[in-house]
Amino acid sequence: MRAPPPGLGSSKCQLGSTAIPLPPESIDDGLSRNVYAFGFTSLFNDISTEMAYWVIPAFLVSIGAGPAQLGIIEGIAESVASIAKLLAGYLADRMPQRKPLVVAGYAVANITKPFLGLASLWWHVLIVRFFDRVSKGLRSVPRDVMLAESVRKERLGAGFGLLQTMDSAGAVLGPLIAIVLLPRIGLRNVFWAAAVPGALAVLTVWFAIREPRHTIPGALQSRAGRTLRHFGFRGLPASFYYLIVAVSLFSLGNSSDMFLVLRAQNLGIAARNAPLLGLVFNSTYTLAAWPFGKLSDRYSKPAVAAAGYLVFAATYLSFAAGASLSLIWVSMAIYGCYYALTEPVLRALVGASVEPQLRGRAFGIFAFATSLATLVSSIAAGELWQRYGAAVPFYFSAALATVAALMLVGLSAFQAGRKGVERQRA
Picture 1: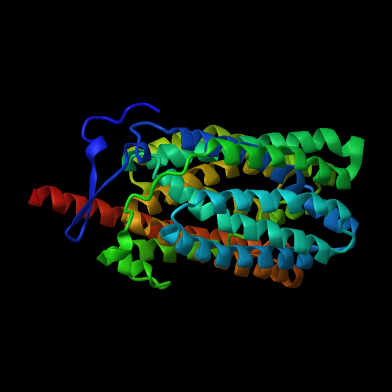
Picture 2 (picture 1 turned 135 degrees about the vertical axis):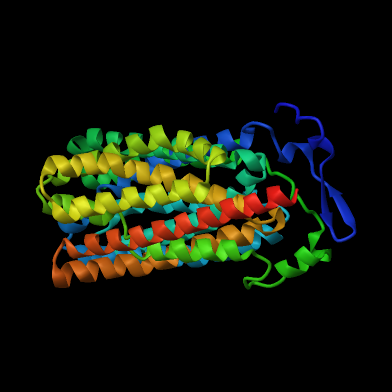
């Protein structure tokens, strides 16, 4: 690891009257070993996940299930993930070591995922997705906290951007591998084949990740530490809660991407081409995530995320209209920009907007709120589709995304005004 710039080696965190030195290895002026190690872990894990994910809708149809069952599966999966993320956020601020929780999360997901190959009823798929999402919930928050502690604050966008680039690169390779394997080994065996990159993900996180020290060891004796004793929501700034409201509103319309796949099939795209849909949007996501993450380090993060929400709205309007198959393919490519403009940027915004000792709780609340809203969204999308037709849930999602984008623009303006006042006072 490169040496820290002058002054960082002796950095201190003031907690009441106690000054606690920050270890040099926990902050880096570039992107640290942990960022790249987490990136490769996400690469392998997403190859495994995406090999299975994009064929689940066709698999459900093959065993007699439909949109309503898909909505229940994805809704329940996201709800348990939301609870797991909230718990993980609390634990991330309390545990002396976070790596075991991260390793366990990747291990459980990749042990259970191949058992999709044994499913014969839709609720079998639900069980596998349950364990997959619980394990994701338990690992994602401590991983984000560890990553945030491994880069300087002004490089958070680039750090999370690189993570998402590697993650989405795996999401490109996963569908490609599935496309090659499907005609040769069939749907069920694709699930078993996904175990190979899954094992590589577990091995990478086990051997390559270093545990950053807590930036505030002994914080339970401080005022900030006393706040951590509570599972509630105290100690976080009002701007953070405003962000949570905006993102939760958006998430109420952000149903599972499996509905995009079902809609595409509904409009005439063959089930065998479903992995290609994932390939198209993840290719854009892979190319754009790191640059947009870096962009958010230079410009307003809320404004960048707002642009992502507008891209989402445009994509869902295209799927609602369903004018042509060529429009669907183009929209899926553009959809990757939504992910690149929001996923790394919003997490970097959360990491930058709260004190280090509260990051675990902040990431946990953020993940809990968005996942809980996604639960409602997936179930509602399935019901709206069944009752009013395929286009209605997409129009609904586009409308909520537009309102949420306007809220983020308001947050951006507020932050710009506050910085102007601070400059005047200085």
